[in-house]
Image (cartoon, rainbow, N blue to C red; front, side, top):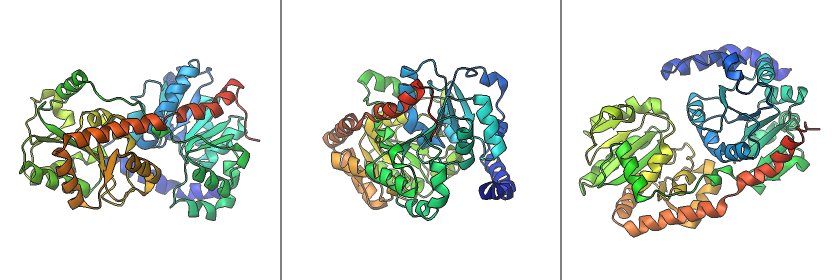
Amino acid sequence: MIYDILLFLLAPVILIHHAWRTVSRGRSFAGFGERFGRIAPESLTRVAGKGPIWVHAVSVGETMAVKPLLRELKHRFPERPLVLSSVTETGRSVAVTIPEADLVIYFPFDFGFAVARALRLVSPSLIIVVETEIWPNFLRHARRMKIPAVMVNGRISDRSFPRYLRFSRFFAPILNNLSALCMQSDEDARRIIAVGAPAERVHVTRNLKYDLPVKSLTPAERQELLRSYRLPADTLIITAGSTHPGEEAAVADIYARLLGERSDLFLVLVPRHPERAAEVGILLEGRGIPFIRRSALDTAQEQPRGGVLLVDTIGELMKLYALSDVVFVGGSLVPVGGHNLLEPASVGAPVLFGPHMHNFRQITALVLDAGAGEQVDDHGALEATLRRLLANEPARRSMGENGIRLMADQGGAAARHLEIIGPLIERGGEVAG
């Protein structure tokens, strides 16, 4: 009741904030009804009456992480449609590119009437929430409707754990609505139990992010991708992926200095939020660095050495990582907490990253221990490390091969998750006791 009252009081703020984000980022209001549980009847025909599995992944990172599990679910239960929901526009943009998803929707606001309507319309046989997506009304109404819910790839960060503990009396009954909680590590399992999850329902199934397909490009595949992006074939490609404000300027300055020493370079710059491309473009213009936006490539000739491909689209980062001779993963030179280092590692690209990796501590340790990447302290160290690696092809190749081995050794999380989820589906679902 207290939660519902707070939501009611905050509703105007939530709606105004959402509308402002949509307008300020130049995005469409299409799908706004889905946030209130209204789903178009023509969309529902794909899943109606088939006992779909509803998978909720809040944004891009969670959507990418759950892809291996979606593949396994589709392979083992082809008769069960998969409904994939997200909160953010960028998450949805990635979700619609996943072939296993039969229906992609926006997750409803956690108002009781909205989640109840969405659950009735989708009528799932099972709900899967990715990582620590704890929506009280959604899980409560699912349990009322006897729909089992499972948490997958669960984790509780160092920063979040004290807050969860402080409000454990609130979270414990919510966690009790989950039939199983599949956690990334023993420590995550310990933490979720301390917050109030029933210990007998908590399982350690490892990190789905390790189950990315492992594949380096053949020479023919590389040439084809280079042609598709109009990239010069005789260059070393540096990709700066998932960058944030402050990082693009540093990368651009480093790139300009490296070009003063050698001309066989090309930079691919991928802001974490593609709507920032105009801002980053102004930054590059101010430094006299030629660039072309990804969205304008169809009419472009082959790009010259010393240029920049500024990516203002969604869903292409893995292909660009696969083309790269060196990758810098953003959100790490500024205190954002980092992004997934395993994406470049899985395609054999040597990876560099800054000191701010607190959201990916376990992955960071694995990458460093495997020799698949290097951590730098600041802008100067990033420049020095890039200069060294660009001059040392054997070192780049060794780091890439170490990344491929790391991914192969750490895989299998999707199969472990299915050991828990599969019986729930086969038995028609068992709601938490």
